[in-house]
Length: 336
Image (tube, rainbow, N blue to C red):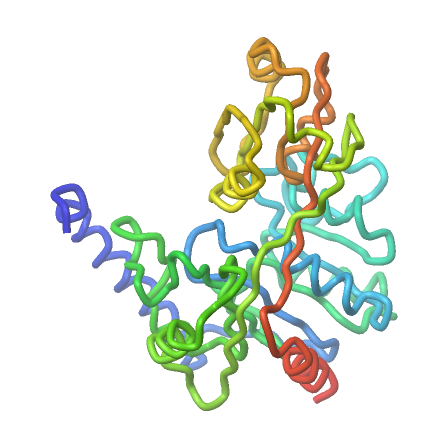
């Protein structure tokens, strides 16, 4: 442990004690958890950001929204509005948050709502749309005021929860033993090929409980650029581009360009960054005609004035194996 982490250790200890007491109060039903007749699927993580939660939510929407009347409920992180907000044609990343706005734009067959008070949000949505038969609760692992039919915990291959430490020394929001609340654990951002020895090692370190299943997913990028400039990715291989990211972990995005031997410069911002016109002007002054960003960043950038062509790559997740088993568990829990 380096000197900075050593100095932060007392704060981590306090944080751990507080979160453990909170969880015990829920475990012993001192704090109330609410249940609903409509199935609720919780998707979240123990660590702070960067686990690939949005593409996983999109995977669930693509796979199940044609079968179920689905609603996505999110906190709407870094939005300017307060309280319950339902996504409409007048919504923006500023009013409901960048990730909910992205999903609302992409999937017209589902409802999207944001509210810090998830109980209130679920209650209002079910009252307004009684035909709803499936609710996805985004970033919900620490939100124990609602009982989920299925709890899905995401953790990254490069920094799994069992190797991490509690905030602020590490990036865990609560004790790593909290993983036991999950029904499904998904190791995200895995390599293309995972050898059996490494797989067994991770399975052993996760220490799966009897009720839990473990799955591995990888990130895949669509080869079609979208946005101001719609091209096939192969068309940019002989030119230098400028990459702009405002996400928690941009390593997968950057590695995709390295793997494809694209010459680039990179401008990095913090996660959920709210861009302003001066920043766009500064980026564009670099002289690159083509600027590529993430889909989440483009949701905000598109509302600012741009002289150059800004494009983005869509991201999706793919299971390395046992996708059918995941589907079976998912549907079984919904109909329980």
